[in-house]
Amino acid sequence: MCLRRLRQRDGGSDRRVCVLVLGDIGRSPRMQYHALSLSKHGYQVTFVGFLDSKPHQDVLSEEKIQIVAISEVKGVQAGPKLLTYVTKTIVQSVQILHVLLSMELQAHILMQNPPGLPGVAVAWVVCILRGSTFIIDWHNYGYTIMALSLGASHPVVRLAKWYEHLFGPLASHSLCVTNAMKGDLLKNWGIKATTLYDRPASIFRETPLDLQHELFVRLAESHPQFRATGSDLKETEAETTVFTVRNLGNGEVTLRSDRPALLVSSTSWTEDEDFSILLKALEEYEDFIRGGVSLPSLVCVITGKGPQKEHYKKLISSLNLEHVKICTPWLEAEDYPLLLGSADLGVCLHKSSSGLDLPMKVVDMFGCCLPVCAIQFDCLQELVKHEENGLIFRDSVELAEQLKSLLSEFPSLDGRLGTFKSNLRASRGQRWDDNWDQNVLPLLAAHR
Image (cartoon, rainbow, N blue to C red):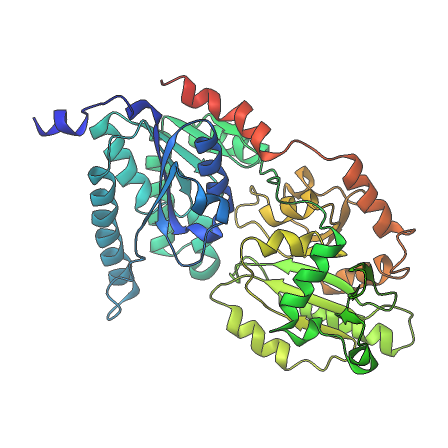
């Protein structure tokens, strides 16, 4: 009787999907895109996850998307770490089980992995009980991320690897982010996955000059790196930032000829990104200028939230930089694409823990026709084409040389930086919506 009630269908059951992420919804852009794509095709979406930061306004305003916030469980803080992990897993399992069994019957549960402990097992059990289709979207392997901080031989890491290998193949369908991961899932996990490359959403595009100026004015309110200085402030007929000038008479916005170059990077401030590489490269760039090399000043914006942010902020404050300014804002979801579309160069320090996933931040940068310098790791060539849409580096010395080379003719776009930008404009690939319609929609339709 209880099982029959759990599986009781109604007229809307086939058009309901639960999107589950055991992380911050606001910092899970791919899952937000999934939710929006589902809603565009008429599905009612229950979006379950942590609500630490604000999701994109399109998600919040979509009537077909209901956000169900769950809280992150800390576990018992006293005693050994193993006890913390065990209690956290048990409490989180009960929480997820309650949420999934309490909602209306869902035709599908689409879950991000990682993080997948304990969510994958709980979601699979719920799908068995309720007759729903279980879809895992593999972004990486959770145990490889844990190994960065604990070591590959740690008992918790070995347990996580066993867990993923046990429950991962039980999903009805699997999506993954690269062809390299697709091959690894088949070879080592026995999982037939569909590659759904990250693609930029339509919001990621080059930012018009007037919107650039408005963004810089907003950022200047809390970040002095964006403010005009000295004699610029005496202009009474113009609104100025360090990058732009608006004529208050006719409203026209122009880029300043003496503007610094705008360098952008984004991060979750975790172990798989070593930002000391960028900081050392910026110190070397500073030395180039002090040594007489003709280069523009730099404003480096590093966006994001994460556990190591305060550590790096202390390192940044200790640097002796005159021609390089660094700020670390957390941007609203609507401002992030505007910043990327206003920048001159992007930097990516993501090194895949598995060597099988690709940084979505680079996908977004390319959507804005922003060339990228990215650190080398396996399968990066599926995204970054060296000397075509950006450059690949291995250490801070190589990155510093690339910055010097690319910015040597700034602000002119006659050099390699301009060529990379032109290549990105000419090779605009498939956007998220079309990619999703081709690869995910058929999986859902097959189970209607």
